[in-house]
Structures are given as C-alpha cells and as structure tokens.
Length: 106
Image 1 (cartoon, rainbow, N blue to C red):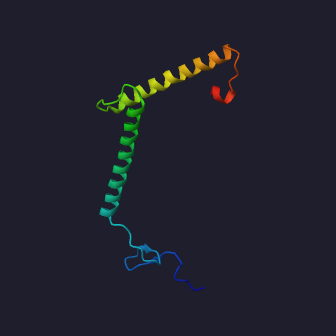
Image 2: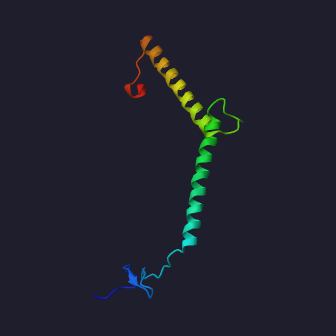
Image 3: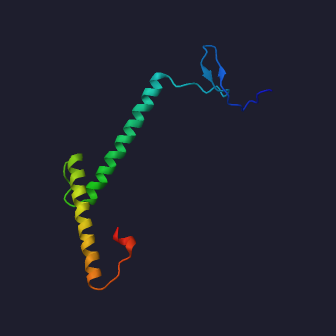
C-alpha cells in the first residue's frame, strides 16, 4: 500500500523524532514558553475585563480602586439583594390576585 502526499501518518526523521509528512516543525522549548506566556496574559486580560464590567454594573463600585475580593463580595451582595426584591415583586403580584408563570419564579 502506498502513501499519498496528504497522508498525515508520522514519519521518523533523522533524529528519530516523529514528524508529519507535511514536515511541520515542532515548537522549540522557547516557542512553547512564549506561547504559554501569551495565553496566560490573554486569560488574565479577560479576567480583568470581566471585573471591569462588574464595576460598571454593580452600584457603588464605580471609580474605586479594584480589589477583586471586594468586587466579588459586593457583586454577590447586590445579586442577593436583587433576588430578594424579585421575590417581593412576585409575592405582591400573587397577593393582588395576579398569576406569575412558574418559569419566572425560579
């Protein structure tokens, strides 16, 4: 059976390392390290942007120096407050004889 040029099965190079028929070179350790650093920087930037969005959405966080712990705590407090308010609205509607869909009560 002969191999076609598009076959991607590993071939053994001079040093005994497996390479694809495409001869795509493997990354050096330095390239791997740089890719890892770039990926980590991208991940950290996404986290920073998420915290920045929270500071824009949660009252009382605008313009403050950003402590991630403080942002998370105030966000949780704000969400709990909103859930209590939502339940109070549902209770008022039902007390007044209104009907609230079960899907909206969750």
